[in-house]
Image (cartoon, rainbow over the protein chains, first blue to last red):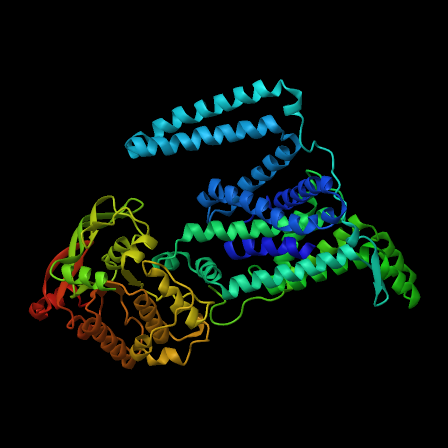
Length: 370
Length: 248
């Protein structure tokens, strides 16, 4: 689970150097997309309902990728090479998305649609009709408040109708029920493993293979690697860099969506779901080494396992059985809650980064400094 | 294919690249002052001058990496002043920058394949690397699976020229292709460039310090303090001019 989320981030942060604080919210959107798909499938009855998760994964991917595309086109593309501004902008986006999920309803949805239609449609129309370069600033000044005004008025008008102003999700958490074939579990290798976990692990491996194949073998993957390594030269070779940027970002966001799908299977989903994952995913990427997919895989496993071992008290139990000193066991028991386990893991990460500041697998060779 | 050769035939008589009245600034400092330059089709034009007179800046402006405050750039008869670098590359300008700028963590083969992007239709499916490239630069054939960044300077330079040629450009822009490279490879690169011109009939705009290479060009422009101060046919390039603009 951590790995899929981190995979998306490894692409966005590692390859593009964009610190995307809205990544958690993209995960959350993916989870909500799963929820919506589940609700659509409910009326169809049992044989269909079982397979909603298969449909939900691509839909979650598409929803998050689209949102990522909007974020990239709307904000991040103006901020490449300016990490601080990117940080603030994406944080703002994450707040907007969180509130959007809380309060989105039909009237708001339509109002946004109308705004977009009026504003961008108007711009397109003006571009076609008149000399755009000369009236650009003036047109923006007139068009923006006009479109916004109409959209707000429309929103207020529709808001009077309770059926339309009822929020889709509300601020409360929603639950996604796993389909029947994912319930229960198996006791393989002496461990009790729920099917859901196995499903997520399989999904992760699939995503990993997919991403690897895409980056290493496809034409667009090659373009992505070229642009992330040498932006100016790539553009001189005739590669449309802005298109590649948008694609890369959308891909990373889409992976966040799939991660969201996985999250929704593990627990209930709320507007703040993304928050609890964003720090962990960043840790994975940093520990694994920025821009290194393999590093992310190992780091995700390492952090996940460490978290579990300390958090669940397994380590303490194990030490008791081998007669370790009592003080050590007490210490471990003290940290044997999930929040305290995080404290330990982060402390360990800090120590680790002191020793290997470039992550698990730093880039070697003649090009390492580039 | 036939239509493309028609176009190049048609333009063989007139100018491939025309730059007029270019003024480029880095912030407030004025780098290029009223630069005019033209490259006739099928010819090799050399830009000479000491370090820091704005030669690379001029090439970057032609490529679209820097923008001029005034003036126009025409490629063929098409104004390209406002186009982004990737659009210019697609029109047929192959750029070999100073310092080579090989994509470091991509294999030599993929570096070459990236050159295909500059073709007007982009890269289609599984296109192979044409054999001519390896005839020009045999050393590349043995290194296809190495990382681009692991090659030596001379090999990288050959790769950069090969990569630019992959896009079948109509104008090849070379920025100091022999800088910091051992003499034997300098000769190889010179021979390759000469052969490219002879075989494909493309135009070349070259920035160069090596006098031997400069002599190969048809026409020269000498730059000083951000402006063109002398120009003419290389045959008339006298010792005096060289002393004035090139000697340290």
